[in-house]
Length: 265
Image 1 (spheres, rainbow, N blue to C red):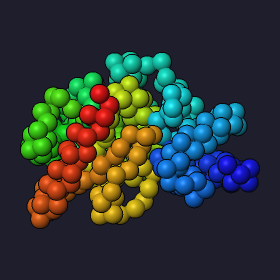
Image 2 (cartoon, rainbow, N blue to C red; image 1 turned 60 degrees about the vertical axis):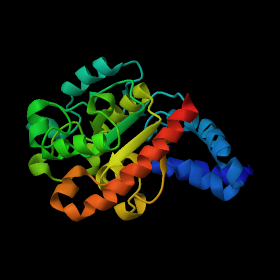
Image 3 (cartoon, rainbow, N blue to C red; image 1 turned 90 degrees about the horizontal axis):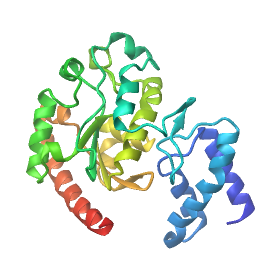
Image 4 (cartoon, rainbow, N blue to C red; image 1 turned 180 degrees about the vertical axis):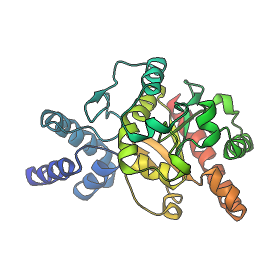
């Protein structure tokens, strides 16, 4: 790659204070043919990441290509899921810690090849310490069964580990504080696919502000892991007319999951 193109990419990533999502892929696409873009993106990130760390910047999403996940001075690279859960249970990295009943770490099969990521715990989740156990959780269980997944065979987590007051939308600083925990969970589980449930989950994972209707139409990537996007079950409860579109999303996701899982065997 031309030296000036590499410099432009490095400056852009520094301005973002991290490397995440599809940023490197999009910039590589502009400089290389499509068939080479993913390879060149890998090279760009591996060149840029040490410089970012030496200047005190934090890695944006999960670790890229085996590097430990770090953000705002936290290094979780030595923690397994049980140890990570213990850390989360005592977390005070944002103001939500003062109002929670219990943290909601995640649940399901830690060897699952697919992870479903929602927005944040609600009232029932806050009381029980488990994700998706209220009405939206009951609907999620039915959605999973409809495409051949038993709930205990998948892994389910949220962008936030604590309930926002009144179930309001997560704020940026809260999502940033929680991000290293989800990043480490995904590093440990190593799924072949992620399903983002709703706009907030999709924006948190992909670092985009694109409308949900557009995000649903394509496949995205979180650190080389394919990400499918569909509606949050709570949205389907509020507006049952969305269920037909959600069903089409789920069928497409299941087909892509099966193809990706076979390729990984």
